[in-house]
Length: 115
Length: 114
Image 1 (cartoon, each protein chain N blue to C red):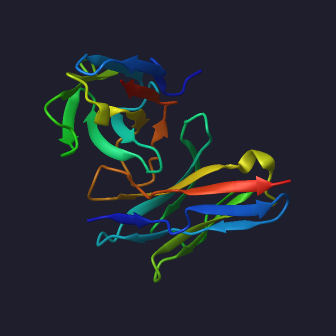
Image 2 (image 1 turned 45 degrees about the vertical axis):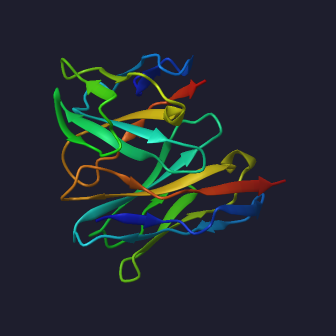
Image 3 (image 1 turned 90 degrees about the horizontal axis):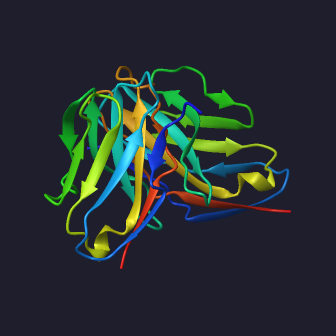
């Protein structure tokens, strides 16, 4: 399977704990995106990387959130001191960098439940 | 700023009939792309179809077609010959040439009735 891969698929954590999600993009894609989706809403942009550089971050990405893509391949999204409001699905996507027509392809998402 | 509006929270269609899901957008960028994604209950966002702002013809992909009306800033998705497996959430999205984000609408829940 050469699609976008995310793990874990599901995570239940206690409030205050840290969680980390991993994303492996499609191999030839140099752009990687993180989105958050809550029930009844469309995906909301969090951040994106071009190769290893984090080029844009949303205001939604508080200082408890950090994302890395150290070698320009896989990426991690860490949430520190989780809050119940962090419960959502975290979607990773990847694309080629140039052109408005370059579709982003999503992974299956990582569901986070904070109890 | 870019904005996508989907005004139909839920739609029902009889199996084998066609259905149109509405999408309007707002952007000041002359170059942009419009996309539709399907999200089944499993959660994965599945790419369906793409339309470029300068494309002269409406995009088609199998049973999916995009009714692009640039002057009205609308990009409606038409699904022909609906199947039970088409039941899912459908999201319209836009990417402007000057930006890097994809902006999504709030989605339309489609239910296909046997």
